[in-house]
Length: 274
Image (cartoon, rainbow, N blue to C red):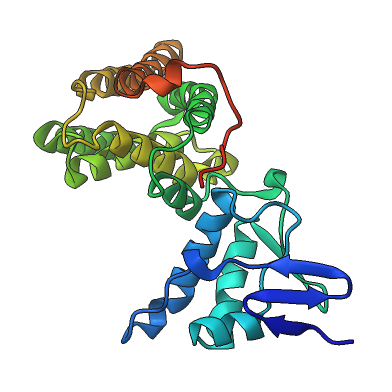
């Protein structure tokens, strides 16, 4: 017997699969080119915040398009976006299900944005981001000291100057901060490490925005960036490693001073938010 639709519920055999449309916004008139991205964001956020659990099925494209009055094409494109980020999988006749957390690409810039834009992120998730940074960034700074090019040093100096001029509490300064960290990673000359550039830069950006959410930074982080640059310019790998370690650890301390939750016992990386 085929699938039946009624009041947002989908029947498949003896299994009842529920899809809550409350968190999915109706498309904005006149913006069809952005529709699939809006749908992907709403469903992705619902997955990341625990409204849809791993193993659960989403509504099929017929039910979804009828409920929100959107085209099936827009829904299918949104599902493709989510699948590319590891959040869902689609199988013919079986439908679209939420993947296990181990498949989620947490470093995808959109995934990071959806997490941070949904309110204060879970403390354990912030800690894990900084653990990643503490593992990757000092090592990349050491390699950059040995392999950087004159053009990359020029880019680092330009980014540092922009950070100094604007400060990291404003968008111009955060863009310069992102460029600084991306350039250090690119200066490693390691193409595999380079694939982490957008993810690391997004992590830096969103943790910095989180620190400055009240419009000001807890302190000026430019001196640590300058110390990293001077060590890389000097070609001193171990000093570059030590200076980048200091930078990341001080950034974590800044967040801990404004968000006491980070000093509490560890909980699940992405706690469910109702």
